[in-house]
Image 1 (cartoon, rainbow, N blue to C red):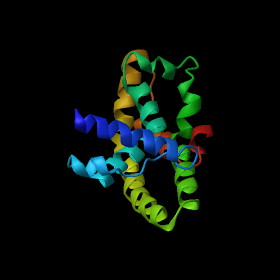
Image 2: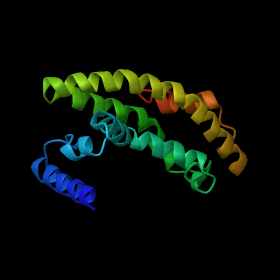
Image 3: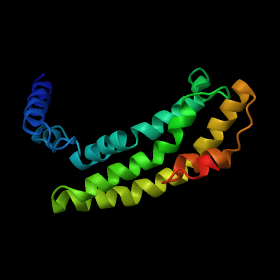
Length: 160
């Protein structure tokens, strides 16, 4: 009970001090007191926030009920899919352009790991997405085409 109280107090203080400054909360003493690694928590928080849109677009394509947004009859997700990777690039630019040197160094390391990982994992996810779309609608989409749509920093491939 006391640990929960510390967590809630720390969250309230952190949120009130950082409203409008940064989306990511600083490590709190309660994390250390209960044995949590604050840098690990920060990594997962930032990963979830930065890649939320691409993860959503892949989820909409893979899950059978949700992939109706990728139907061949004008599914709305086809308009937003090319913006998945540019959204990551824009967040990377904004996080590297502002903030303290310590934060910039951390974000450089984060993006040096996460962007190549996204590019690597996007192909198997593209394969799963195209298989799901094909099984639901019979729409022939090549995994490489979907992959290029999802990783292109400029959605040039989408319009060719």
